[in-house]
Amino acid sequence: MTTGTHRLKGIVIRASAGNYTVFHEGHEVLCTLRGNLKKELVMTESASRAPRVIQAKRKRLTNPVAVGDTVWFHYTTSHQGVITEVEPRRSAVVRFIPRTKEVQVIVANIDLLLIVFSVLEPRLDPWQLDRFLVAAYANGLNPVIVANKCDLPIEPQTEHHLQVYARCGYEVCRVSATRGDGIDSLRERLRGQIAAVCGPSGVGKSSILNALQPGLGLKVGQVGETTHKGRHTTTLAQLFQLGEDSWIADTPGMRNFELWAVDAETIWQAFPEIRPYLGECYFPDCQHDTEPDCAVKEAVEQGKVDRRRYESALLLAKEAQERQQTLGER
Ligand SMILES: Nc1nc2c(ncn2[C@@H]2O[C@H](COP(=O)(O)OP(=O)(O)OP(=O)(O)O)[C@@H](O)[C@H]2O)c(=O)[nH]1
Ligand SMILES: [Zn+2]
Image 1 (tube, protein in one colour):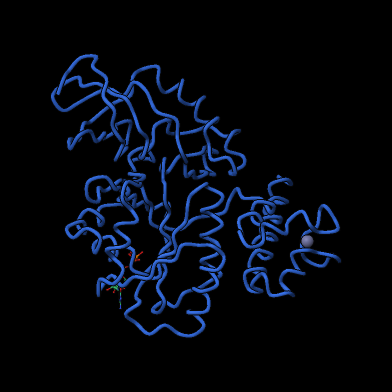
Image 2 (cartoon, helix red, strand yellow):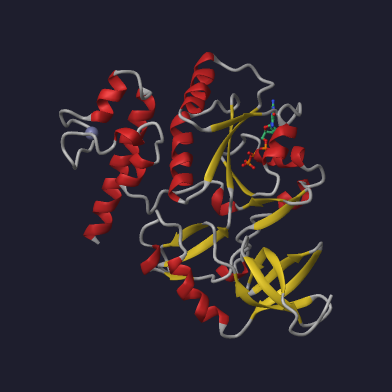
């Protein structure tokens, strides 16, 4: 530990009320921001936002430094420091706060998004899973579908869905948090990465985290504490260390994504098996719905694109259009 101007590099693992816990070589350093940094960062932020998330540029950012950011800092006391610089972000998951019309970075630099579903109890809902996959795409995150509770019988329909996702090119990990199946290879997959976890309630997200890292349980329970003193006192996200060089972000705001800013075009693009056919339709502005000579619908007829996935994309695209119209009317 060196106090003074010696610059050190760390990762922000917690943030609240202008205080940032920076992890550096096994130590947690409580940091504040250097005076002028806040202003400077607001500008770089809009340039480094997730490219496919629209509107972010025009909105004000509430938090220039977020959990997941790689920062430069120096010690001011034996366990406190000042952040002087933030490295450019690889990705940013943002949330729009309607009340203040501000955009908040929930977590930065996520490499992988673990989308957890259970095969049974509750049964995997592919329509809901598609929403998560679109959200991952829109936020520039690499998704991994984690099918949990594989100790329970897998119904033929669910097996079919899992195979369709694999054929679309998605990574599918089959695990059982309670029996331990697949947990070692999932841990291996997470090596050297920052991963976030999302998925519906009751599918076993906490159980998987605990299976990956016994002893994590207590910490997981602390996430999501809110106070009524205002938004700045709310813990947005936390990173938990998983072994030497893996981090897990467990964030209340990310357990359920909202597709608030995703446009219809992005929805279609988000389906990797449909992507090759976009732009091949007769009408350049084809909505892939009732138009004739639609390359996407032809691909569905020929069995190259799963019909349910196509219907899912159509549904989400229509929703997005309605949202855009409502926004436009305001
Ligand atoms: N059979 C079986 N049950 C599991 C497995 N993993 C978790 N469960 C059970 O599923 C229930 C929900 O598990 P949690 O880990 O709390 O699920 P969660 O996704 O974190 O739920 P929320 O906190 O509501 O979002 C619990 O009763 C677990 O014991 C599994 O692999 N197999
Ligand atoms: Zn079309």
